[in-house]
Length: 80
Figure 1 (cartoon, rainbow, N blue to C red):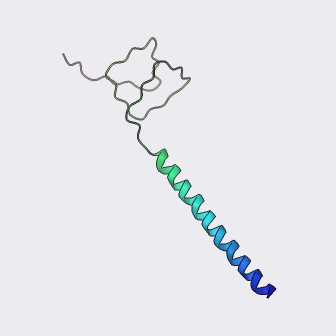
Figure 2 (tube, rainbow, N blue to C red; figure 1 turned 90 degrees about the vertical axis):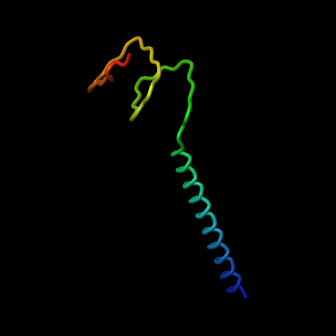
Figure 3 (cartoon, rainbow, N blue to C red; figure 1 turned 120 degrees about the horizontal axis):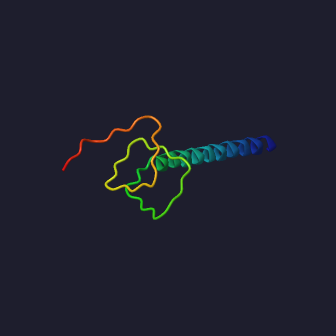
């Protein structure tokens, strides 16, 4: 009878481990999906950044005290 109890406990442990692994996987996939969400609008009143890299940026109005360009800078043709 002890052998049957041992097998039952092993099966229960295997099932619990499988459920735990599945749960961790689901949370990991959810975290990846959240990481890929696009942020549509952000309003920041004041910020200080040491460095920032942006792949693509559209700006309607920009005021800057100092701008340093390390590679190249293209400005659109002036439209009046």
